[in-house]
Image (cartoon, rainbow, N blue to C red; front, side, top):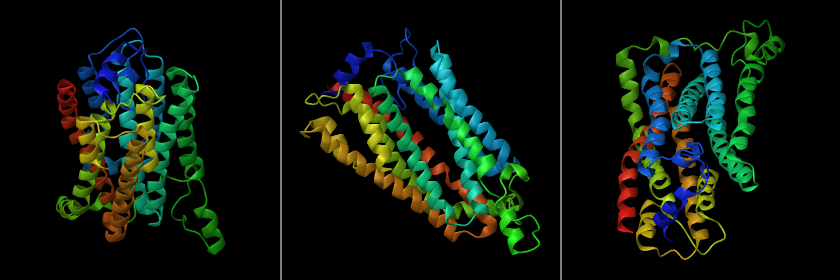
Length: 357
């Protein structure tokens, strides 16, 4: 193993070798960023917009109807693919990352809040969908690039995803409540009408739009029992993902450094840890095979996915109807806050471990 050496060698390789939050995957050909500055720039562009959206969402985002929020999220997702794919400058690439972050943050807040006006069972389906989305994104990038498709064409091939998001919301998702039906059959028919034929779903009576500041603060304090553990889970996971993955480099395998990183990211999503164990291996190099790391990362993802599902499932069960929409929007800050804190510490740790080698 020798991750730092491998990282430095590959700074001269072709850009776009690495998916996920990586400076090289968004820097266009012919441009270079110092690795430290590039990592920090991409990290800030990826995290800050989502963090700001989630911090402000419980305060007033409920005043904006759901449909415009979903539309903005879909447009930003498509824009991010186009900007990064056709970028000729670092600034343009980072703008693409910002758009992706806006799409992700706004979409998560919107759809988690929307679950409050549907049966509680949809929380589990939503959580499964987020895990499936991460796996599909990581696996598709891994598969298409290893099959020989360029990063640009890989990104362009993903443009159908935002279109599918908008089509599924406006044409497939059904209204949670019938609009003044006259009987059971009419009620079933009304409930199955696509949302585009109705007004956007309105919050239930006594929903979060009617809560006072004092009520919001009381609900938020009750959510801390869920928020703090989930913050710690995501902190540990992304501390590994952002600070250690790049340094876990095995020479005794047919996978090069960039391919190993892609497999780490894909397996994490497939499982969605062991922080001390992987940190010790970066320092002491005692793991004999990359496949042991694959298993550990898969387990890491399983823990993260289970924590996410159970947190929001329990919030849905234990909050009252009038508080649920606000509670969902407030609690979704947990993952982004954990990721942000991990990024602040992962960068200096990464540099420290590189200097040791």
